[in-house]
Length: 265
Ligand SMILES: [Zn+2]
Image 1 (tube, protein in one colour):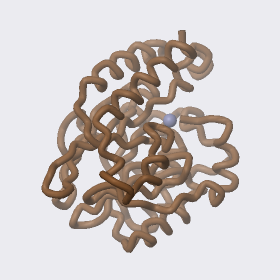
Image 2: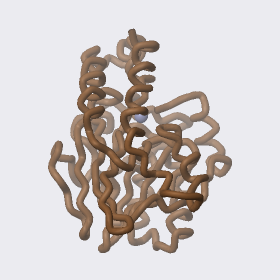
Image 3: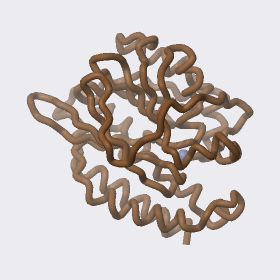
Image 4: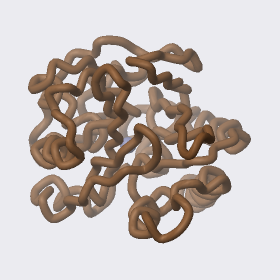
């Protein structure tokens, strides 16, 4: 998702730095106040979900260190979609650690022929090699951690969401991150100007309906404003784990559906 803040986030990433924090089990947040990056300790190397923007990489890597991990141990980067605020840091992180990059096949054409769709502002985007595409709904195992990528077209054609289990106090919780909810790329004006099919609007609404039925105990946002990630972080240690929020996933989806009706009809 992009907004007017994006320019300043790219030009002055240090202003948006956030202390990394533990969410639950093997899951940590290492993103900034604009866009989320998640670190998962797989037991055999580190996995990242998304990479933030290229300009933020030094802060992303520093957040890995602050948690006591070595950024050289990042082995896999799972990208939610092909917008630069999610994938822009992937090239440099992979260059540093040797990580393998995964992306939805339906966004591959952004990098092959349509760089305008990557939405990279302010002149800095490093190309990267995609190691593999997701197979919709098929669990992938990294170390002893299993994660499933689910195709959620709309925000981009190749947006994928991630589902996985976390353990805390002997209980198992189902966590999920919707990979792309912004309606900024779904207005008639945007789709027309970028020669994208209007059917992405239908894909988006159908996907929201399908995702809304998912049972999610620990919703995590692809941006911090999805479900109030930083507000929850401020409540860590002051009672039950604030990230356990069984209605949060549906709440965010309902709000986005209202956005869609307002901006895209
Ligand atoms: Zn996006």
